[in-house]
Length: 157
Image (cartoon, rainbow, N blue to C red; front, side):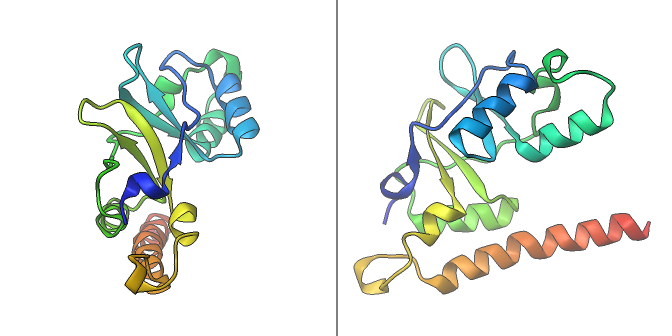
């Protein structure tokens, strides 16, 4: 099964200059937790998550309308391609410790978002090319195990 068959197409997105108030409204209205950031050519240049926004608003003495997504966006962005095998995308997500993967075409234009939720909806029989529940559980365990260890180490330091 290919990523393009499973991903959420036509995802919500914003520009680097979008302020956090508008970004939160988009996240709320579209019921999502990640917002790809695209330039004027529709190329992916970053992502901002609901967590990024929450941390920024909690640590800065500024209103949401004064902070842009480019000021708080996550650093390196890991992406997938629509033609990637779903198992490859799960491996990418596990390695990068992310639950959502922006999907871009060959020139970097945003095509969709693949989330763990999207893959869960595709669990089923292996003989039909579907992902197993075990594949998803392994991916989630990999994502959450390191995140939990990093939080524990930071708290202990």
